Amino acid sequence: MKLKYSFLLFLIIFFLANIVLTAKPDSTEINIKVGFKDSETKLLADLINVEKITVSFSDSNLVGKKFMLSQVEYVNGEKTEDKDLIKCGKDTITTMVGEDTIHYITADLCDRARYKKEDTLFMIHFLCDNSEDSSARIKIIYPGLFYFDYLLPKKEEIGYMLRDFVCSDYKGMFPFNKKNPIITFAPPFDMGKGAKGYCILNMKPVEEWNKYYKLNHYVVFYLEIKD
Image (cartoon, rainbow, N blue to C red; front, side, top):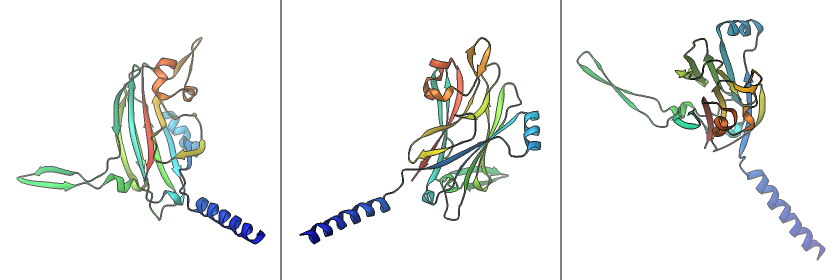
């Protein structure tokens, strides 16, 4: 009888261990670095008002997954734009060269935004030229120098800043197949008595920043790591 119970216990332990070993992870570690590494570059960036945030991942469980970015703009508490920056599928661009019609087939951006077998580190760089008064030039660089380059408007008077949600370097877990905010481009909020601040914004959901912090305009970048 003892032998029978021992065998049943062995089967239960084996079954549970097999579940643990074969279960797919539902998240990975995200690393966020703010600013530039060396002091000379930091000084130059301060002088020309350029900001940088690097988001990175290193995990063999990410092989084959796609890093999908989207940009959402909020004005007076309302979502006015929700734009996918990574789109799957190939497009055909038609142009005229003299009297000839030329058709260009673009690469599938999803393939270029995918974690590959040979990757040991997947990095996305966010760069912001914040020197102009009315707009900021944003460049988002994926591995292989695949990037976006465009302008973001400034609708508040002063002080827009590109930053993550803790205003400093960060390391933590990031879920798969879920759209999460990671970077924002926003002006400071009024803390009272003439003080301005950025870093308490993460205490409330991004959709409610107008309600709680009286921010009339800001842009949020979301990331989703998809199968």
